Length: 183
Image (tube, rainbow, N blue to C red; front, top):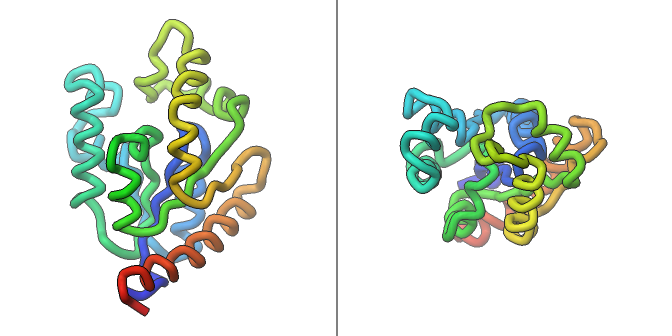
C-alpha cells in the first residue's frame, strides 16, 4: 500500500466537527467520505434514535464494529466515526490497523453550543442534556486524547483545521505503511 492511499479515521466527541472537517479533507485529498452513523442508518433503514430505541445501545455498538471491520473501502476513504465508536473496548486498536486516526477536539462550551441545536443524538435524550454531555465528555476524553493526533476545532476556520488534519494524516500515513513493511 502507498501512503497516499491510507484511510483516515476522524474520531472525537459529538459536536467537534468530524462530519464537516471530514467533507473538507476528503474533497482536498480526492478521497471518498463515509460517516459511520449515516452508513449504519442507511444499512438499517432507520435513524440512530430509532436503532437505540428498538435495539439498544449495545446492538448499535456492534453495528459500528461490523462497519469498521468490513463495511467500508480499505483505501482512499475518510471515515467520520460516531462519537462513541472509538471508546468501545478494542475499537481504537482496530482503527489503528485500518489507517491513520486523528482526533478532533473542542472545548466543552463549544460542544454544548453545537449539540444543543441537534435532535438526532439519542445519548442526549435526558432530563439534563448539558449534564449528560459533561458526564460523557469526562468519561471519554482520556480515550480520545490517546487515539492519535489531537486537533482543536474551537474558533478556527475550517480551511485551517482541514490543512492541519491533512498534515497529520500525511505524516502518520508514512509511518502506518512502514510499520506494515510497505513503502
